[in-house]
Image: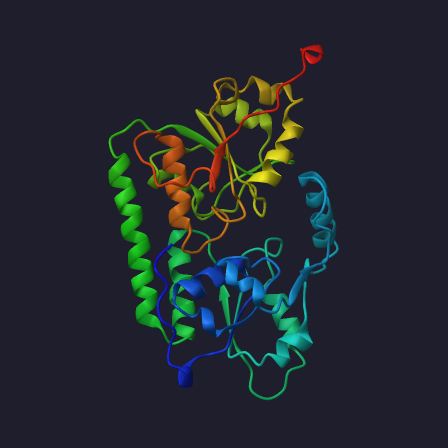
Length: 325
């Protein structure tokens, strides 16, 4: 992650509330960490944000399997209800100058509509709302510019973007001319979903070919039959919101699947598990690290940025007992 910049002068420092994890990372990369006065329940990086007041919460239980969580969220959305709630009283008491939210996905994080509902009773000076709407890398850069502009640090925003672009270009040059493995990225396990939005761009930059999803489009629901038909060289599993430990546990649901067991990438040991909570699914500065992880997986021995084992691991399925074979 780029070196964090110094905070602006106190007399001009805006009070910032970030309600999405990617924006919190952007705020800190811009050197505005000391200006952040509250966070969402999902904001966990950099680690010091844990000390900030948490003013959002999900309206569903986070426990259970990926299928159970999927059912709960879909049931709420189908009823036209908000997936998350915002503590409107605490939000008002903190008197923010800038509130960062998103209108990209009502399932992934607190949305613009959630914030507008929380602010509807406010009187007096209203906070400036910055709504992020990332669908591709260009949009992620635009969101950095949007946050930098709203907080008076435009030059820092341009510096951060240039740093990200240069690192991605350097990565492309490192893997240029090499065979491009075909990758199936799994964003959710049960039911299976692949990665759209910026994922195809990251895979391309890392020297691979994305088998599912297209740049700028929503992440597609797929089937394991689709994966079998595509016959990927490599499979990377990095569910949104799941770290390596949780994902590895969730992978157990695939052990009894004949389709999964028959995949060439599974048979040949080219399945990897990534920290999908920290990488890939947060459109902020660590998208560069996400591309580096992809390059390490797709081109082992050619590039090594040191992301293993904290960013990803080689999946080692639990061995079956002899009585099961």
